Image 1 (cartoon, rainbow, N blue to C red):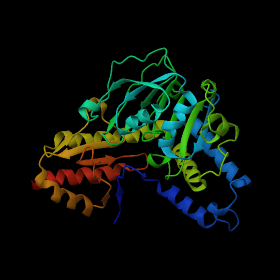
Image 2: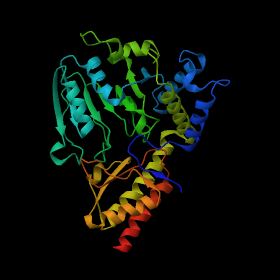
Image 3: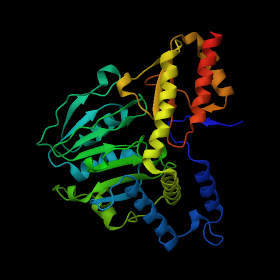
Image 4: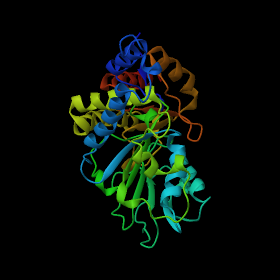
Length: 353
C-alpha cells in the first residue's frame, strides 16, 4: 500500500532523495560509506560547499552579503544563538505560537525583551497585525509558519531594525524577498532533510556589534570563518539536505514548488470549508500552506474517521495536543495525489454520516 505521510516532522522526503541517500550510506566513495568517510575529506567538503551554495541560490541571496551555515542543535539552539550574537540591550519579538514563545524565553536570559504583539490569548489561531516595531531595539524576531497551530505570516513588515526569522517549517516553500531578513534559520527536519542539522542564513554586516564575549560554538563569525566545519558536522543530514535542495532546483526552484503548494492548500481548505463535518482551527486569512489544522464538528465520528484515514495509508494526521483534532502537514515533497486521498476520505465520511 502506498503511504501518504502528513507528519509534521521529521518531514516527508522525495523518493529519489531517499534512494540516493540510502545508496550513499552503503557506498559513497569507492566502497566507503558516506557516514564513515572523513568530514575533512574533499568529498565531503565539496558536499558542504554545494549545500551552502544551493541554499543561497534558491533564496536569491548570492552576492548580497549573506553566508549559509549548516549547524547543529536545531532551531532551539538558534533561539539562544540569535540572542548571543545580536542582543546588546533589548529586542522585539512577535509571539505567534509555541516556538516563538520558546525563542522569547531564551532571549530573556540575556536582557530586555518586548513582545510587539501576541496571539496567545486566542491559542495562537491568528497572526497579529498592525503592530509597531521600535526603532531603538537591536532586532525584530518573528516565526514565519506555526506548525502546531497552522498559521503563517503572509506579509512581513518593513522592519526599521534587523529582522530575524525562524522559517523552520516553510523555508523554500514560497517566493519571498529574502533580502528583507538579516538572519534566517530553519531546522532541516521540517522541509529540507532529516533531523540533525539546521540551516542558518546570516547577513555578515549585522554581526560583531555586541560587547559580550561569545562562546566559540555559539558565535556565527566562527562558523562562517570555518565554513560550517568548526566541529564535526552532521554528515548524513547535510548530504541529504543538499540532495533535497538539488531536487528543488531541478524542479524549477521555489516558484515551481510554490505553485504545487498552493494547489495542495486550496484542495484541503476547500474540503474543510465545504464539508460540515470539519472545522478549520486557524483564521482563514492566516492559514498555513504547510500545516492545515482542523477538527471534527462531531466527536462521535472520531473513531470512524481515524479508522478510515489509516486504512487509506495515511500517516501522521493527528493534531498536536495544544490544538487537538487533526493536522495535515503538506511539505514540499508531499504530492498533490496524497492530499487528494485525504480529501476523498473526508468526503466519504460525510457521505456515511
